[in-house]
Length: 337
Image 1 (cartoon, rainbow, N blue to C red):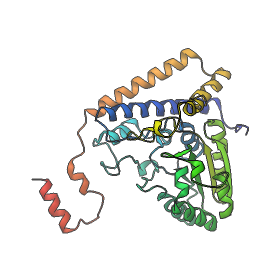
Image 2: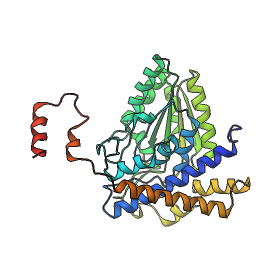
Image 3: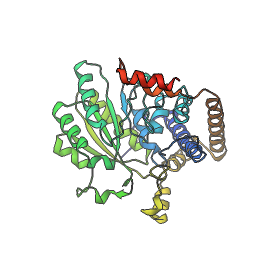
């Protein structure tokens, strides 16, 4: 598919920078997890183009419903690095106060915290979109999930209601080929995931999830259609998880080195870099300086956040009940002893 004519040189450079920063952030968090400073982590290495392009194609008024692998989306939306780092290190700057490990949300940036169960946020996003439509807010919903989520009932219920209600919802399936260790071919008999949208009465589109230009173009069209009242779209972004499923996973148990290297040759950052070089927007020296400067900035932010206070243990009692029940109040008093 041809790149969107509105994709300027400045925007392409911006998205490249955001993908690089997401890659560096993920790498740093995995290292901190290995050092015992982060509980667990899910890297988005290899999938950065999907979320970065999607959020850039949307508007700041649009809502994001992420899973646990959308670092690029948070960076593209403008969430400060300090906030994202505090989230992982359990510091007071974490908007979730230590709740919901692996997940992130912050209503200041219109990011709705994802659920623990896979796909559970999909019908919620549809209801959210229905309400936004009733209120005539003009906002669109970006819902991210993996191919494994399409095997869950919530996926089908959500898409069915989105089709019936014509909600302004963009379903973005990051088909990274595996649901943890289960390959896509063992999850569904359909040739594609995108074609499942047809059964629910709306359009399904396949995108090269490693091509940031193509992703931007396809999501832009889906967002415009949804905002104009044209209903939902299911986008199957074909990509690959280069990293392990999580810091608790050993991917060598279920995939080969040859397979990983084949996909590594289609790394979205490498592909975008080649495009920038072809357009004379970037060269080796500038690219090296970019990686170095972003890496140094990230290291500085981590050092700064590490010096801030940890979230107090009592935070586990907050933001659950508007009026805590008596037994929780008693437990809280025990913690404060």
